[in-house]
Every structure is written in C-alpha cells, then in structure tokens.
View (cartoon, helix red, strand yellow):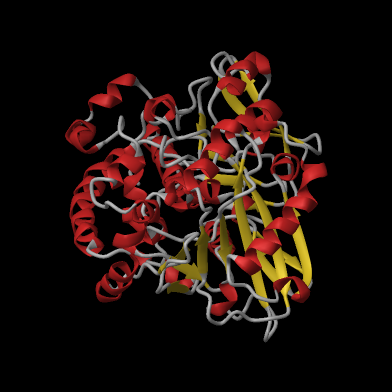
Length: 510
C-alpha cells in the first residue's frame, strides 16, 4: 500500500503502551492514529474478526454487513487515513449512490433523493408541488448550521467550562436544541410527508423526529450536502481496511481474545485481565465497547462512583432493531440500493416504539438491496436482502422468542405488498433473524439499544460519558456511548478525539 514517506520520517516513538478493548470502528480509528505516532498499541477483540457491528457474516454463498449500511461524511475517515500517512482509496472501493435511496409512503407516493440537483428538482416537484424552493432554502440554512456545529462536535467536553468554547458560543443561535427535529423541518415544507422525508434520519440515532433535538437536522443535510456511499463488498470492508492500516503502522491485533476485567489500582487504569488469565499492563486503556454493557461486564462496581448499575439503568436509551438477513435466488433490478417504507401513520409507529414500547402492527422498515450495485455479495442472478425494522429496546419486556417468527412473517408480507419485492417469500434460500434480545446476548448491546444512549439534550456533549473517562485516570472511551455519539462518522471522531487527548498528555501533536 502507498504511504507518505515524509510522514514516516516525522514519527517519533514515545515508548508508551496503549491497550484498546475492542476492534470496532472507534477502537480501530484510535489504534491507527496512536500506532502511526509510535505508540505501542495492542487491540484485544473477543470475536474472530474486526469491526464489531461494522463487521460481516456469511450465510452460505451470501455476505451481509451486520450493522451500518450507509457511508456518509467519508471525509472524516479519509482524514484519519491521511493523518496516518495513508489513503483510504488504496484500501477500499467507494461508490457514490444515485439515487441515495427510495422513500415510499402509504399513499403510494415515492421520492428518490439525488445528489444531482436537477434530478432532485424533478423528483421533489413530482412528489409535492412547489417543494423544491423549500428544499433550496433548507440547503442554504442547514449548511450554515452544519458549518457552525461540526467544529463543536470535534472537541471533547470533559469539564463544564468546555461549554464556553468559542465555537460552541458561536453555534448557540443555530443549535435548535429546544425545538424538535420535525419542528425544524416544518420551517421549510408544508407537506407532512416531505417533512418526514427529511426527519426520518432520526432513526440513525434511535429517536423520534418529534422528540429528537432540532440540532440533528444536520444529519439529513449531511446526506443531501455530501451524498451517501457504498463500499464494494459491504461497509465491513472499512473496518478491515482500518485493521490493515493499523497493522502496517506496527499495531498488534489480537482476535478471539476477550477481556475479562479492566484493572484499576489507586484510581488509575493499569491494564486488563484477559479471559485466558493473562494480565496485560499499559500506560493507557481505551474502551471500545457498548458503554453501559462494558461497565457491567468488565469494570468492577467498586471502581464506579458515577456510573453505578442503578444510574446506568436510569438513563434514556435508543430504540432497538429487528433484523432479517435474506439470501434470495432472485434479482430486483428496478429497486434502488436503499429503501425506506413508511407506516401509514408514521408518528403513531414511532410513538409505539419509543413511548408505548410495543410492537407496531403498522410498522416502517428499511431495506438494503445492495446486489443492485454490488455483485460481490451474492451469486449471479441472486440477491442479499437486508431488512431493519425499528422496534422497542429491551425495557419493553417483549418476549422475542415468542414473537419473532410471527413478526418475521409480517415483515415478509410487507416486503412483498408494500416494498415491491414480489415473489420474495418463495425465493428465500437462507435467512437469519436478529432480535433486540440477540443484540444484547450475542453482541453485548445493553438493552439491545443498537444506537446506544439516547441523544437528547441531557445526554449530549458534557452530559455524555466523557472521552477521557471521569471514573479513573488513564482510561479513554470511544464509540457511540461517548461524545460525539452514534453513527460511523461520529464514532470515527470519538476515536480521533480520544487518541488526540492521549497524545496531548504526552506533548505530541496529531
């Protein structure tokens, strides 16, 4: 792989050791940056492959991403590679999608958002007359908001005085923190379905558009301003690329190596106890795991004063997801890569997920038909169909062992009747179901809340678990449970922020 020779000449090993617990996207990002600066870095991953939920699995001849399927803000990951003297494009093949996705509503109307403005004008005017002018206003206003907010999300908030940063003070008029996301989009569009088309992205943080802070209108702007991408072979290839870059910089990756306990002595993280009984010490420990579950599983209760079991349970958490991964002996060439199919009463559906905590009879769902653009995932003439249905997290006490097959059958019917996947049922060759219970038991996701701690005002910035963990010294957090939050770009940023904080402590510039 190509490297930047001048960068290599600048490396000054510092002789300090870092242990990273988990080879998910945040841990890999931190590992890449630290190893590239000369730290001795060991990543311990309990699974046989890297990536965490940004990994993959195979069902017979079919390959599936476990979790994320949208790549946005690819410049964030490109920047991490560049800081390590490497180029992302040397490791993966990235495709820009057009249309970005298909949105289908109960009345049959469909919207195909495009990064091409002329195409966007045509699809919007067909969907809702005179809506394109509102779209142009949306792009103009939300770009200003994006430009103000992104610098605020790129710094840590480990003390209350961080709220006085120049960037955050300048961004206050743009925050919309006490307005709902749906309320913000109501400024631009009169048609309720058009508003939903620009607020459904709240599902990326596991929240309702009617309760998510208006701050998150930048998520839909990120899509419309920067585009959506696919990686040939699936987004899991990003984690594989990061692992390879990490190893090229001298990092050591230990797969099938679970961490049993974090070792804390006199208020300082000293290392880890591995499942095999071996103790590994380090100058710094980085936790890259689902935050709440990691606290329960690997941190002794005596070492937790703020994040006790009771306080963890009392926090607000995102929704969960019910997943179907289908290997299908048929192609759907006329259906785009991504589709979101909305319930007839979307607000009721969202309220049932987040407030009533019940399974909706009239549910919304997301479908990835990646084989329409990527022929590496399934044999010729066949398709991988990935289905995600937002559902309540495990605070609901839903008995998924009892409910899952009935719900699976309803989803298959909805795919055929509402999604346009005709003949799907009779062409399924192989399948896998993942319920909220499975997210908890098989993937160590607390409450099965796949988008981690909820992203309300009381759980953001300083009020989220800190990148430099506040419970004991020399411990850092990365991933969706810390600042800036869930979603691949923000998780990469969490890795960069924590790595930079470690370097700053040692007088090294990133």
